[in-house]
Image 1 (tube, rainbow, N blue to C red):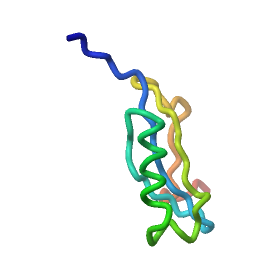
Image 2 (image 1 turned 45 degrees about the vertical axis):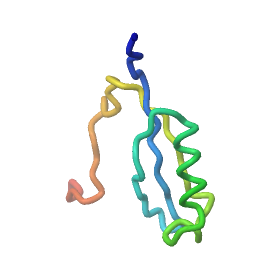
Image 3 (image 1 turned 30 degrees about the vertical axis):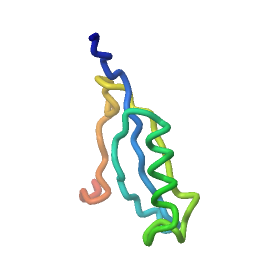
Length: 78
């Protein structure tokens, strides 16, 4: 049996109207992410903002921070 190498994953997260983000998880298929949305959409923390779910395709091995990373918590340069 041949193993299929995973080349991408689907990051599922939720953003509410206050721009608070909740990382839900990384899934192997977009369909699995959509199934989880169906499970969560009526639960507390999600039902007040049902359109806040986002699925982002992430390529395995890709560097997503080529320009550096800016933290919201880091002190700003003067």
